[in-house]
Image 1 (spheres, rainbow, N blue to C red):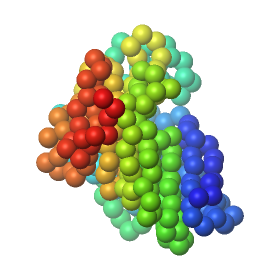
Image 2: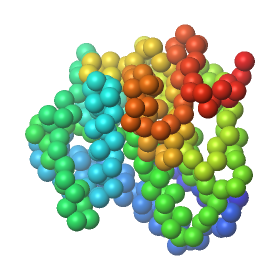
Image 3: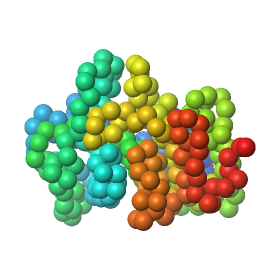
Image 4: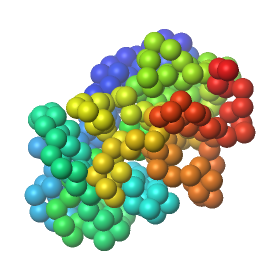
Length: 288
């Protein structure tokens, strides 16, 4: 497959298709990704959500925001508040701020999700309102949604065989499976297993992806403001990347059985002590 590669939202992207991506399609992908960043980035003062950090208010988001917010609503409930896109303020307290100061202060819980945020779809927009100042960080599922949006744009353009890879969060469609290595969270030159990916999405979450200071990383329990210590990495297979991405984060805090009550997915979860658990469909994926 010919590749179309670019850098965006802090990671490397590769789009592989059976037929070449046209210049017009590349421009459409670039605009889509740029628009997503302008909407949601907490690292940009000009983003749509940026004013909400200073004071409560109302902003217009794309209609695609509604399924993302609904996913967060469900994951917040199932995780007992640990998964919460208002965790941006907690990350800033730990030093992962817009200036990348990495100067950590005392941990601080995020504002309560259900009490702080409401939204409704009006025509082609999602109207989001907040009751307190909030700092969004949609990293738990946002990159996955953006993978889906790029994937659907290219599929609508006529591409029948394609893979969208955003920093190893993937969505694939085609007659031949991809063999995907599961990166060891403590040694990125090694893999803990290999799985076949065909016409599904695979997303991973790992505490080694963004680390600074002693024991500080980007996967934070929003209820405490502290980085999780018990789980090192999780991989999820699902029908779309937004769901896979969100569940990969939720597995750091939530029992897989609880998540399986409302989602269809397969998973591998690796703990900090090296143990791994997995769904039945993942048997044989891990190296012995």
